[in-house]
Length: 434
Image 1 (cartoon, rainbow, N blue to C red):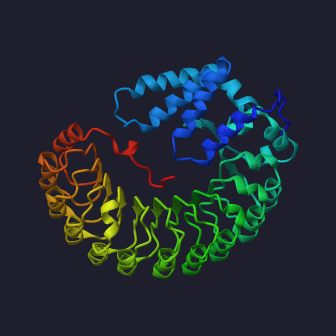
Image 2: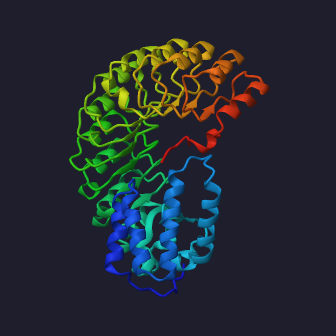
């Protein structure tokens, strides 16, 4: 790749500091609103348009999928982007294969070879580099990753994502030993087979102490890897931790629950970790998860015994999202769940659990689910009997999104359910949350 030929100038230090503050608080809107105010007050016409664009994207992020205001706001944002994308992107506009703006900051997906060497150095020096929040690298190998770990562009990135690259331990060690990693608030290494040794490398790296988000989906991490992460003295600022698709079992989970690692975590994914009722019992006994608001326990073979164990967990009443896909709950487990004090829950995901009409009846009778806005019941052997209960209930006053496909329900009743619960399921949830 030829080095970029755009004008390369440094941004004002005050602006750079405000953008960095927005990156360092990725889940907060306030720093981005402060940034927009500064652009409006101190910037040129393009900066003022960017200020409006940031506010629009923030508002769109907060709106429900069916909000009547969404279409007009999206049109306004698209128009601003068409008019100003060249100025906002600068040399990054040459990366035609994948760029977008998320809540005002730049997300870029590219072949790693395009950001190595002199090209990466020039990009890091350009005015637009400060806006680079999320960088997704493809075609990565140990040698290219070692080179990138020395690139000044790395220090501009808020969240680094290197998915499905089968990196292994050696490459991870080279990457995280770079001091330039210290500015990261997010690291996504899903599908990389780092194993227990890789988990130990991550846990022992001081340059990751600023991470708020860590995604280790599908990395062959077992109980010893869970213990290594739990013992980290550096990973103590995490708000989002994805350990789904590994094999922690109760050994790894016990270590995590006894550590300080989870003290600040608000979203925890433990999808498919062979936890079983024993793991649910460990959760039921835990007291160190006070910040937790979203919990994914999909495909862990919990069964009714696991739900019974979870009922002892005092933190259940604080959860806002609970995902229990594919846990063989049946009607018995669902009836137990309906007795749980889920006062704050707005999202409940129960697909592939064979709960049937009896399970639906328990859910609609529950006194604890009045805050639900999303309910996933697809593929649960629910007939028109259960469908009619969902249509006629008064106990789910806030429910807007109901996923009930792949059940033996008549088309006429499905149409009525869609009228009552109008938000399509595809707009509410993705299988691999990020």
